[in-house]
Structure formats: structure tokens, C-alpha cells
Amino acid sequence: MSPRSQRESKPSSSRRKATGFKRPSNHKTNTKHSSRNRKKIASSKPKVAPEDRKVIVFNKPFDTLSQFTDGEGRKTLADFIPVKDVYAAGRLDRDSEGLMVLTNDGVLQAKLTQPQSKSPKTYWVQVDGAPSEEDLDKLRKGVELKDGMTLPAKVEVMDEPSVWERNPPVRFRANIPTTWLSITIIEGRNRQVRRMTANIGFPTLRLIRYSMGDIKLGDLQPGAWKEVSI
Image (cartoon, rainbow, N blue to C red; front, side):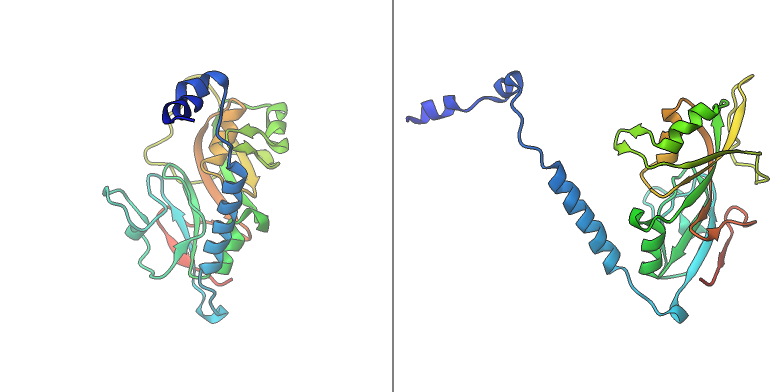
């Protein structure tokens, strides 16, 4: 076969599109690699003796990044925590508040963050509107997000908690009620709780993480931290 006929025998990109030709998906392979990479990262974290373990409980303020460095001058953990050689057990969105746990113990970090450990994380969530029990049952059963179904969540309506005022304050809509929910999940996808409440039609206005595993925020105020023994 001549070079010309060889070229003509290969479908062009437009022809592939027209005929529905697709390259084989390697999604499962990528997922396996991603899982292996997460395990590799977790196993590379330092394992420390109990007497050398550091565990910091921190109340992250609104508009603070859950990392120690930033090239854009935004507030980070370094603005509040002077302790060295600790790293965050999971992230908390910049626009979310509440409990962060920082540690030098990789085993504890994995226990608090990896889904297979089934370590519960509880959030106090203020949503726009008044969801019914039927609405909340959707979260309890799991909802379909862009990255797949969520695992069943524990969801209860709660009284407004006695917490600090947010700065800046939450913007409310006139004549539209808000509702506080206690939502407990064992996953940790990006902005998961916010996406869950939006999925059922009740956007999150304010989100405070209250507990991770057996570690609770307690009466710790925004920007404050303390070292605890576990």
C-alpha cells in the first residue's frame, strides 16, 4: 500500500467524530493508579512514637486557606499556627470554617481522612430555605454528583448553634428562611457537603466542621488552636 493510501485509510479527527470513533477509555486504570498513589502517599507519611506525636486542634476562620504557604498573600495556617513539622489531616475550603486537625503522625492522618477508615466528619450547615424530611432523605440515601453517588449521610435538622459571628456575615434573602443541619459523612470529596445540599435545591450559606472522628471543636474560637493528646 502506498504512503498516500495509508494516510487515507486512517480516519481523520472530524471523520472519527462523525462516526462516533473514540479512543479506548483508561478510566479504570487511572482510578486504580490513583488509589495506589493515595496508598503510597499515606504509607510515606511518618509514623511516630506516641510520646513524639503532635496533634493540633485548630478553628479555621472564614477566608483562610488550609495550607501553610500561598503566593498570593492570602491568609494561611502559618498566620495562626507556629508549630513546626505538622500537616493538615484533610482540607477545609477557604469559605468554610471550623475544625482542622494537624499532626506529625501519618497513621492518624490516614485514619481521619481515608474513606476506608470510615471516620465520621460532622458539619453544621446553614442552608438557604427549609428542606422537608423528604428532601433530607435524599441525602440520607445518597445523591448523584458529577463524580458519582455519595455514600449515605446522617442528616438531622438542628437548632441554630451558639457560634461566633462570621466576618463577613452571611447574606440572607428577604422573606426566605434558613435552616441549620447537622450532616455527618465518611467521605471527603472536594466541596462535597455544599454540592450535596445544592443537589437537593438548598444551597449552603455557611459551613462549620464540628468534629472529625472523636475530635471535636468544642468552644475553640476562630483562629485559636491547642495541642491535645490522643
